[in-house]
Every structure is written in structure tokens, then in C-alpha cells.
Image (tube, rainbow, N blue to C red; front, side, top):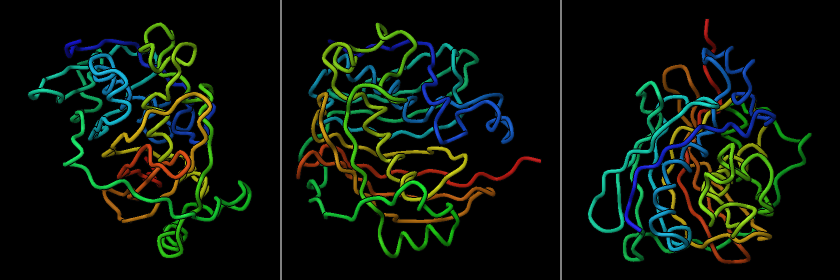
Length: 271
């Protein structure tokens, strides 16, 4: 199938998430008009044309580089614009009904020669218990950068806040519909980078900013995954506090995803 633009209606499946930026009350406190659709869901929209064109091959060895620009809100209509770049690649933009570019990036089929060798699982200690997580202060982040982060175990069951990316499942590709072929969708796969951070420190409202991701294996229903991560940078910009992560997800000892992931872990307060 050839690359085609894709249209949809935005879905915020994380309104009950621990990350309160997805809830209307806290999001408005930071100057947004309502809860934000998760950045990983917006990324999944950007990747939808790739899944429809290249199928399971993209889930197994596709790559993407995405920057989240502006909020996308639940119920908003949007279009994914695609500009092909030769065979097996495109530039994409997620544009809402007000012509605002919410995200943009490049999506492609990764050549084995252009990607780094798959990492090996380190065997990191598990993430702490929920009640034992320290608050996400700069000091706590520095300590994690020095001592290392705990590893997260998770099973893809096709449910939960990233089990779907649309209000109507019929709008999703059958490959990643949990009631059909059931492979893990892009929002769940990249969402692992968010969850490993959130299970190491206690966050309030925070925002996914950008990611470079490489799929290394499609994730079937029932797969048990281990996620390991390292903090590579911490910095301030525009009153926000940022963290950069190197993340790898494994099925057994085989890497199924690697990513360089950036998030704002502490937002500036709005007067």
C-alpha cells in the first residue's frame, strides 16, 4: 500500500493517569485549555501512515524522530500530512482543525546498516515500590543519573491507558487493534519510556517533548517486557526542567525498542 495522509479524532485515554497534565484541572493550572492528549498518542498518529503502508515490517524495524510542538486536545479533529522521501520514508505533521502543527517528524523503515547495534540487557535492579519513589527534584534526578535507574516489568495486554489511540477502535489499523491482531501500538511502545521514568520518581504534571525511536521487534499480546533506562542529561530551559533518557525495552534478552527520550519533568508555574 502507498503512503497516504490520515485523518482522525484525538483521544485522551489518560484522564485518570498519575500524570495530571492529562486531566483538565491541573492542565488549566499550567495555562492549557484542558487535559493534553498524551505525546505518545500523538506520535502514534504520526506513525499511522507507516503502519498502513508497511504493516508489521514497520512494527518490527521501523524508526521515527518526533517533536511535540503544541497541545492536542480530546475530541479535536486532526490530519496527518505526509511528504514521501524516496522509498520507505516520509516527513509527517499532525495538524489540528485550527491548522496548528501539534507534532512533526520523520518516519522510515530502518536499514540495519544505519542503526546502532541492539543493546544487551544489563539486569538493572527493579523500580522501587510506588510509595518509596522520591519526589522528582533536580537532586533526585542527579542521584538517579549517578546511581542508575530501576528496571520496569510490564505485560502488553491490550488494555489500560495506552491500549488504544482512538475513540472508535475501527479507526485503528487492524495490526494494532487489541481486539484483532493485537500487536502493541506505537503509543504503548514509546510510552514505556514515560513509565520507566514515572516508576523511578514521583512526578506531578509533566510533558513528553521529543523522541528518537527504533523498533527492533513487533510486540504480540501477552508479551512480558523489561524496560531499562539511563539519564543522559538534565537541564533547564524557559523555566522548565528537562530530562533526557536512553531507553531500551526487552522481550527476554532481545531488544524490541530503543529510544532517546526527552521530557519536561517539572513545568514552570503560570502566573
